[in-house]
Image (cartoon, rainbow, N blue to C red; front, top):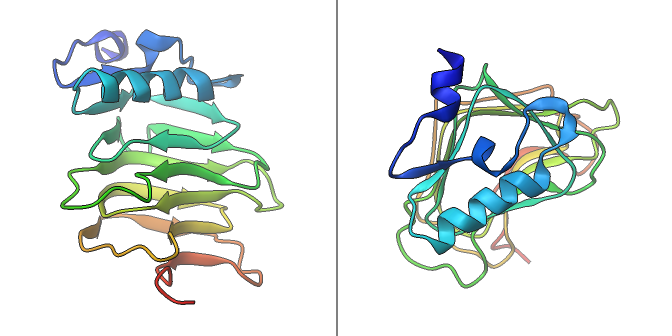
Length: 178
């Protein structure tokens, strides 16, 4: 059944496995996932599907405005990060305006390091989170400076063991402050 899930063809989503992602927490899956995201964006797909697995991420993934990033579930699909000292996912860009249909759903962003340098998601526009789990990150969600977000929904999500050091936040929506 896992193989059927991995190879399923969905006319609305591309599967990261089609682009070489392994999901074994050994191979670096960053480029394969970014290639899938770019392909979905350039070819009019609704989003990117990430099957069950542990996907090693070594630099930020840029999720284009209005795209969806969908895992198999927050206890099945993991983005595993080390000390990348940056965001795992950057959503939209400073020129993204209007009502966003973007979503990040059914996945876990987890650090495998005790130094807590990695951050979760950086927002340049509104987005919906559903079944998102963030673990051992310096900041789970941060809004861009001078960004107005009018469509942020966080549903059935958990933010656990954030580092709690100075300048560490679970959700930082102070982007419009100087």
